[in-house]
Image 1 (cartoon, rainbow, N blue to C red):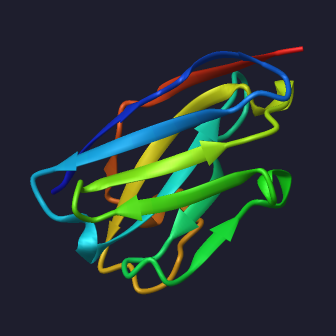
Image 2 (image 1 turned 90 degrees about the horizontal axis):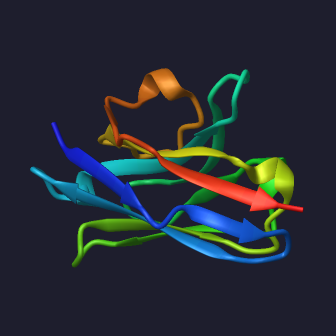
Image 3 (image 1 turned 180 degrees about the horizontal axis):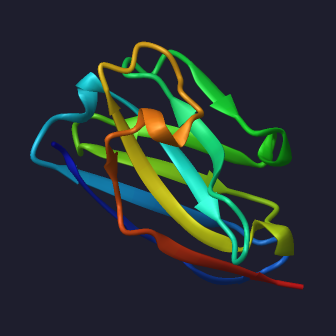
Length: 125
């Protein structure tokens, strides 16, 4: 199993930007599809953005299209989530997740076998 640790969360004003990082250890990420999910208080965990194992395909939730971007740096074994034009409704705990042998981008939480501990993102209005 790969171990994942997120960082980069914090408090930001609406319209601002943040970049989250997810550092993997234990195995190389080149064999994994990766994704970011988020969970707001009282809501279910939802898919945000994902990338397949070769980095050739990405997918984004409609709510973040044009604002959030996922990228992968295999040399650093790290996945990033660049978040621009943040809105108060983006406030949530953000989780990084890994799916072994992920040829396609997956948006379903149960497909992912490894999860980070989460990092809080709070967007003030």
